[in-house]
Image 1 (tube, helix red, strand yellow):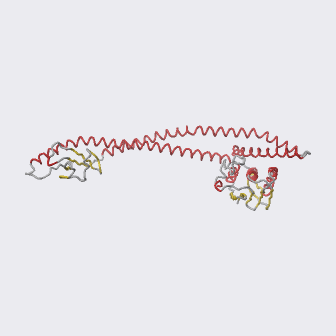
Image 2 (cartoon, one colour; image 1 turned 60 degrees about the vertical axis):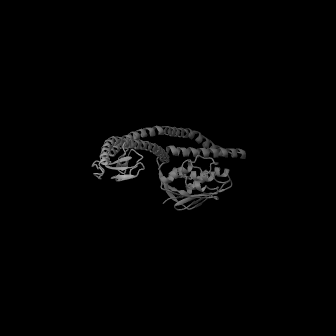
Image 3 (spheres, helix red, strand yellow; image 1 turned 135 degrees about the horizontal axis):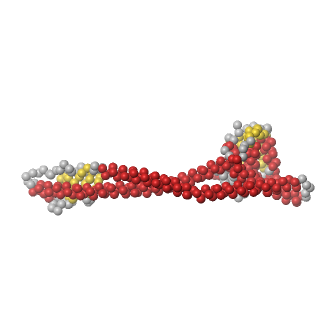
Length: 393
């Protein structure tokens, strides 16, 4: 995986995370609103059904009142409570005490009409209290047709609404992400243009420093020249990092059999001026070791590890390199990395210590190169220093 692919992947992860958060919020609110409308529609349909049933049951209740009147008059002749095949009924006195009932459930007499447990109860107060009747209750079964019709309409409503909300959400998300994508594109162009413009002056500075080093200079001038060289090397390393980030996918890898002891020794010599500026003691030990890899990429990996070992080291500290058959190790004597930052140390823009300069891209490049070639990394850090091991098969 190239560095740019890693960067793109990182952007895609951030974009997906943003889309996920926005999508969850958008659809949660949409579903909540749809649910409220659906619940409202369902209960409105229920109320409409009850109002229609109220008119129908009122007619039947009047019929039952007339039957009660006759029953009241002829009570001595017949003691059979009037029944009707279309409904069950019951009569209750003013205290709500049952006089007679054919109802399946106990009614709620303070209501006029209601639906409960699949049964509709209609309560009527006759003008004449036959047999002491204060409340006449009619009970019929709910056929559920209104419910099926309401649920069918709700299903249609949800289908159409979700489609419209989905299409609308898609365009809203695109509109929402547009400023972020434009900012990222602008930043990408800026980095590319900056790296391009940095190349010529950096090369000019380093070339002229090398020419001056061949001349005989007094100590004070040599020290000043050395500081310029360190600054130029720092900018050069940053330039190389930015170039790798933006152009790494366009640079064809040229893998070869690299002798790691010699390469590490060479890179340690390259950063010697920076080590000397902090009075760091350096050592490298080990045996001949080979790795099949692009030389520029493994050099970039090593340079970033050495740069961190120098940057986060203490003045007068040490950098020790050990080379083994299938791995190498770089250790420093710095303050170490806080345990809570270890898990994020290889993420882009993550920095172990905000008081030390840097952009937090070095170790992300190390991680990208390691992933590209299947190298394994092992990081151990204490208050006495940090060691990183790079393993290969």
